[in-house]
Image (cartoon, rainbow, N blue to C red):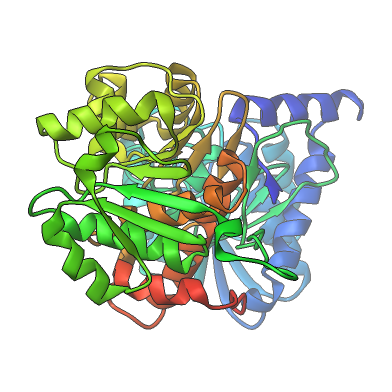
Length: 472
């Protein structure tokens, strides 16, 4: 797990570091540049490197990186499309040292022949839309079609929200410093950063936010004399008339994720299809839940619809059960918003918008803030699905292992809901189950995406039975 800090907190840590070093951040720039060169030394060796340097201190990193590469006899040149830095910041000194080492500069990107590009145009402090030369430069970098290695963050990516401003450099790799930033881990961040690595530069943060850099299993194990009932009862409620598929996906994923017994409460038209898919499931008439809901963990919502029966089921289960609320159950909650402590909410952006009474565009504009607001409003654990899934509670944030765009297929959320519900039924706390479930689901999907054009929920479900393969 890597530490995540807001941009403001990172800037404060830099100021504190400077106050302990005679008020200067020069040593930090040098350390960051050395770390960047060391990280990609093998990639740069024997290749022509073009560094695109801005006129701020991120550009200073670029100048010093170029100087270090010159000292290693790497063929390097620097483009300064935004001009040179002013003489009152560290970047000016870095520029002078690069020139003193014999470095060459040119305002035009196209002037240098290069095999790869180092993006040192803008850093994490960028908080305004690009315009003029900056907008043109980022667009040209992407059109060069070169492998791009970003210093701290791809230029044009908002470090707090992960939103492009309005365009951003598409990097194959990013080496960031001090801590991960939220915008690198959600929205457009995971796709634009490429392979993301961190060097804290020896600076310690007190932030409790964490990022799962890889899947680290914390799945319930079975030991000794045991019985299926000791591994949790999970009740999947949904699949009303003509919508059985979603509930069947949820139930089969829960079964394969290890729940001891899985009961599928759906319309009777779905029973035969469910048993044909997984005869280990136990089917129940959904109407019986209105009488006395059995004990256990629940996943409610997949394929439930918005009928009067769905509303009755939601109203009966809400105060009596705990577990996962997904899909149509979230729409019902949005219509009658109340705190739902003990439930894990798993909205995608449209459902999150309904829950907060805003638009999907509002959610996309700041996924982190939206996840925090949802957790606060509903006083529970929230899984805000999408690129760079966020798990939020009233006290904490977890940025989860990224999946793959090939996973954008029907039923994927139903599969995730079943996994999380299964882990809760097996004894994990809701937040633990949410983080473990999201990371497990994303890990499997990402592995499949390396050899498949699309990844379906039905591709992931069989793999849940296997011992997790952590090989890259």
